[in-house]
Amino acid sequence: MSEPHASAATDDAERMTEAERKAAIVRVSVIGILANVALAAFKAVVGLMSRSIAIVLDAVNNLSDAASSVITIAGTRVAGKLPDHDHPYGHGRAEYLTTIVVAVLVLWAGVTSLIESIRHIMQPETPEYDFFTLLIVAVAVLVKLVLGSYVKAQGRRLGADTLVASGTDALMDAVISTSTLVAAGIYILWGVSLEAYLGAIISLVILKSGVDILREATSKILGERVDADVARAVRQVVCAVPEVRGAYDLILNDYGPQRLQGSVHVEVDERLTAREIDKITREIQNKVMTETGVILHTVGVYSTNTSEDSQTAAIHAALNELVAEHEHVLQIHGLYVDEELKGANFDLVVSFDAPDREALRDDILAHMHDRFPDYSFVAILDSDIAD
Image (cartoon, helix red, strand yellow):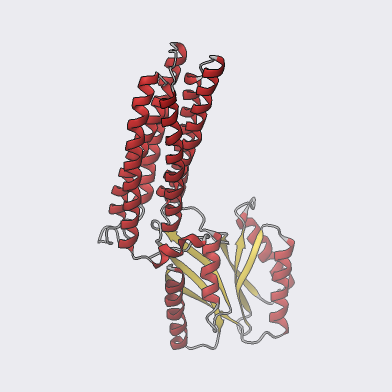
């Protein structure tokens, strides 16, 4: 199954089977491994020959990138396992765990290189540059630019966050290597060695990269807000069903890249039969899966008043006024007025920024009771889960 993303670059991923997506991620990762190992070997030799700590640390960074690609392959294979009794939603979140491991490796590389840089600041060594050394570094910059752009583009196409992170890291490496060339030029022209200091800067950049990767993966595991374009796409498909008057309470759970499952509530005519509602809900589920790749395992139903008499219309208008008056009230939906029982039910979406969400709901209920004393009101407090 696949998940639509804001970018049209994921269209290819949506057309791929899980096996094809996994094979593509592995293929890109293998290319990354080979390229980074080759670069690490070149940089290590050049760095030792020229006694350049910055180049040596750059080689270490390339090895960590290669290790990250190996872990990406392992995580992709685990994530591709079929659902089982203990994991009925599959193993897709293994890719997020893999990203955390990659982040730890990046942080380790950053810490060790920072320690080494500080040691060389305390005990400096004079670097030795020649044309061959600088040529190797320049070639490495070009390779990293090409590799980073390729891996990042493939990561976006496949909806693989780990590849996107690896590609971004490679592009950052190209910038760092460029700064190494600048330091070499400064030394050649003015005899000022900035190698150890540059190594410390590189280490800090690596550490920042690791923290960013870790933060993003942790956010996904904790359960972050669904992408607004994804929510919009699902709602558009749902509302395109003729009998649906509105789609609300969209909840999507992320069980790994390309694996969104959830539920939605729809408003329909109160006169529909159970058979007609069953047909509508199945049509919604099938269309959403086909057009967006999202699985809606539950489609809840709100009945709406067929015709609004003067009192029902007045209640509706009063609730709309309250939405306009309270900045933290984002929406009121699912309103149904029962004239026989003199009761009204509705859902109240209140922003997470509200100081006291329950107190705000109680104030609105009190206001409605004062304005329509003959009616009883029940409000379900909803959270602002999806745009």
